[in-house]
Amino acid sequence: MNAVGTGAPLAERARAAIPGGVNSGQRSVPGITDLVVARAEGARFFDTEGRAYTDYHAAFGPQLLGHNDPDVSAAVAAVIREVDLCGVGVTPGEIELAERLIELVPSFEQVLLTSTGSEATFHALRLSRAVTGRRLVVKFQGCYHGWHDAVSLNVISAEDALNRPDPISAGILPEVLESTVVLPFNDAEAVRRLFADHGDQIAGVIVEPVPHNIGCVLPTDEFLITLREQTTQHGAILIFDEVITGFRHALGGWQEISGITPDLTTLGKAFANGFPLGAIGGRADLMQQFSSRPGGSAFFAGTYNGAPVVVAAALATLTKLTEQPVHEHTFRLGELARAGLREVFAELDLPAVVTGYGSIFVSYFMPGPAPRTYSDLLANRADLFVGYRRKLIERGIFELPLNLKRSHISYAHTESDIEQLIDGTRDAVRAALSETTELGAGASTMGGLVRES
Image 1 (tube, rainbow, N blue to C red):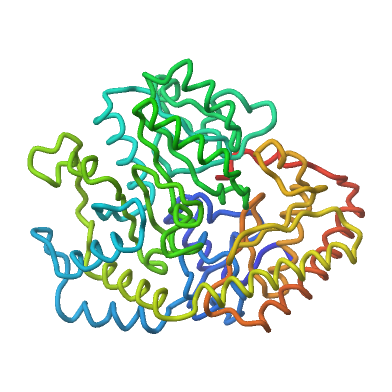
Image 2: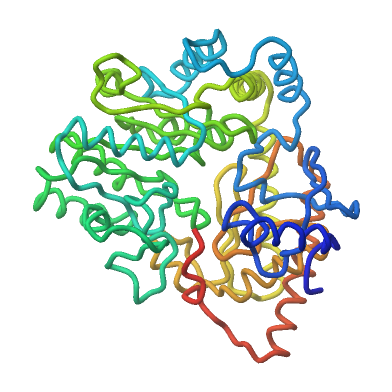
């Protein structure tokens, strides 16, 4: 099967009008170029021919409640009848949402809304430079913080691109890249060395507390503690990018789980169950430096910031997360999925590491133990990782066929869905292994797919 779905005429129209036929580079995936999605509901989406796909991709994770959640949709429909975007003052919903976020997220004393997570991380770095007067920012190999230039480097890199700037886009000024220092994730000693040598030049450190953009690499306690200690000691700003971990792993994000409180936090994705909303929040003395307060030195603006429809979606999402057993349900299914997948790979006598946290799971095709740093993932068989997911799609199960990408469970998934996933994975891996053998492809590692982020 060369392409998923049979929406070729519509896909051809899309390619004629839209570069590549899609509105994000991560949606243009070989083998699914003709997929045209017609509707989505619960744990599934449907193409224009009516074929259903049980969805574990979930648009990179926003739909923690499932697609088109009825309570979220009802809240959005209700607010549309009362108010739309006015672009002046503030709405009652924005006030309520800010107050609820401050109650839930440990680092939040004040908060501002954005339309995307990328905007939130951009503002976090700009604010760090504004309040410290310093130039350098620090990120970690394998972490993704959005599309803006300062952090658009060293996400998924080939082995020979480690330990040097590895931008994911053309057009970035060299001097911007030179102002970003990239360190290995989970390397506390590298952090201490950098601060010992350049601590008075570092404006901020930004980190995914769990680098989910490369699947799932869990942090060590020492690493996160070291980040907090070193930034505090040297007057730098610690930023947790919880665009993925926020609300999906806990109502207070990974900072609630780890007990490490950053200075600033960025949110997105599961925040509003698929509606375009992000946030930046943290210490009040820092947040007061934004120009949303007259006299603030760090410019902050956005036409759609706090739009009533997305605020309504977020409030409905948070209500459901706090009042219903969403985390209990998704965490239980996550454990069932990970345990079942481990049994499948043991049965097939195939070296694999099944890992994740809560509602997120990922299977790496490499020997154990579970990875602790990006370099560990160089052993992953990209051909099999992508190949079996393509076979899954043919069986009506959608995990994004891009190397290292995580998969997600929602409140709408059921135990029956997990059983289907496990049985489908067994068949898909067998088919992918057979095809690899027939083609004589051998075991290729991830280095061939270096621009996926």
